[in-house]
Image: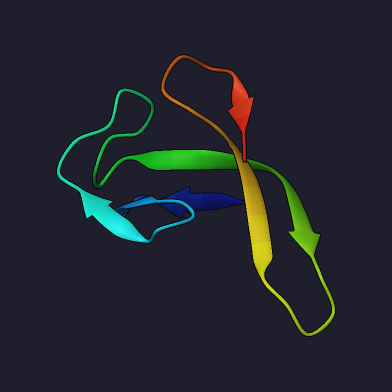
Length: 55
């Protein structure tokens, strides 16, 4: 599965960044894994711009 980066939130504050050293806006990223907590958040692990997996 692949996802497209539509905004750059800064966790845990939720502040939105204009640029990131790890992600590029409108870029497509490969999903490595998903973590779904019952009644909670769903987190995805993707391969970031340098090719490493990151949550």
